[in-house]
Image: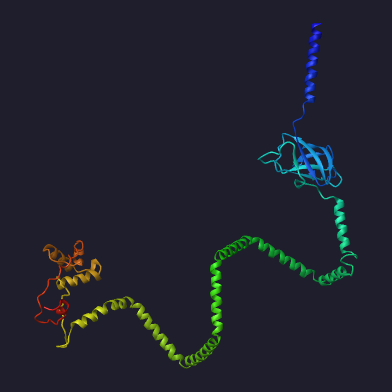
Length: 394
């Protein structure tokens, strides 16, 4: 009796577990898609992603001008929230299936129980639609359409007449067109760059609209002024033509002399270029020299009165050695100049900067500013020399 009770309990447990396994629903998601038409899709048709079956069609029901199709697919296959439903015909006669596209690549999932409107579904064109479109096209070109008065026949006859014997030329034209398209494809970067530059140019023009308008207004004003003075311009052009004719005659008659003068002018120009520094120095010094000459002239005696102190505190030997240092390299300067510099240094006598450089001394410091002029007594006599003129009366 006891074993019978245990056996009955075991059988009951197995039955309950089996019932739970049968009753528990499979983990699937539901989607409702609305199509404009549904052909070859019925309950049990496949639901696929990238051609892989993930579910099936549950129900197909017409709703007014659309068809409601309920789909179910495994939860293990996520579908993107913006997915579309497309009816795919593997062949003309086989059953069709519904494909959810695109494949999931990340982001939000399509919610369970979501509905896809007609805008997010697509159905293939049926073979009857293709035949109907071809039939309509043939009727439009037939005797009751475009060819009702033989226009299509005339067009075909004219095309045949034009193309007859021109097959080689047509082939060459198509070959050239192909090469031209290849060239355009190879230079598409340059073409796009040109279009981009043109766009930037038009943008700059748009930004400078006011300046462009102002320029156009001013240009119109200049055009009106030229139009008002067209008679004077015509007379000026006629006179210019006469003058050019005279100049041409003069040049033809004096060609050799003009060539000689131009050659001489070229020589003079070359000399001026080579002596540019000298000319600059002359132009800098000449005004002061002329002013000094004017001040040095003594009108009573008709002489130039000057007091020269060109060497300053230095003797003639120091002046000559300084010139040698300026004009010659150090190894070519006379040894007597080195001896003179050493003697002046030993006796602490004034030396030029050139002699100081020979004995490795720095340049002499600048002289202190001159003291303020002392007021002179009233003039008694007039010194008409250059020094007296520069110094004033005494």
